[in-house]
Image (cartoon, rainbow over all chains, first blue to last red; front, side, top):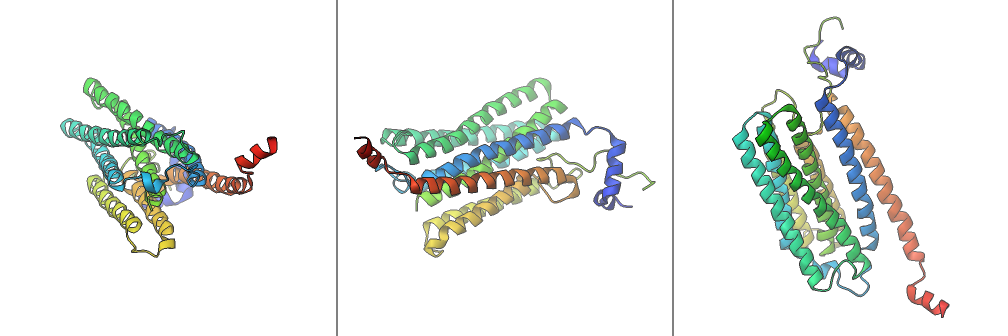
Length: 208
Length: 129
């Protein structure tokens, strides 16, 4: 029986499990983190739903069409997307113990993520300076909590990445560091998925 | 099955985010994903900014493009696949999607009704006067 067929046959799969003991730590850790990420996405879904209900309630204030600058948002999207890409390359390099490539990719990931964050803060500052802060209308409260929560996640991710690079520099690409790096890459890719939804629902539909 | 499976122990499971073992094409996979994501993002901007699509159809077009791009991210960046080594990850994802659907559709349904039936604040002010 080939490996493929063994994996497909449920009986054979059960046999593999019986003989192999508990799952390796790497699988348990990444799977647990995957479940956490899904719960995080559920948290975001509640904010997305409230934004969808409240987006028309501008209370006489500015609407998305007047506020959003799509060129700005396009640059944000590109930096986050490329940062997701370099994050994948960083994980690839670290797992193959190519430390120089890892440092380059991690630095790029950090720089692109920081660019995204700087652009977002600039946008927020501009909105607040125009009197379109979170307390202006229900639409803006929903906008700031949704986009701000995503920004807070990106900030956390940047701190986490710094911590991981320091750990690799100090302790080397050992198994437990690589597990954390795998979790970080999951987190970073999930943030990009949430940004896709944000871009479409909030910015592209809002600016029409 | 009497002979030993050529797979390593727990060959039947793969953590999310990890590429398939013994496959050197991981960088190619990431790059393919990047290209697809760029194309879909470009298409989203194009659809929202031009009259390429019939006006009332634009939200649906954007939703389709966004869901397609999320799929691209899941497959090429998070390495979620339909393979037998990935069943657990897919089941967890399916459960997450179920909860997300319940929350979003339930919220939209209930809150839209509440919103439509709510007495305007100005009318409440009149009543309490």
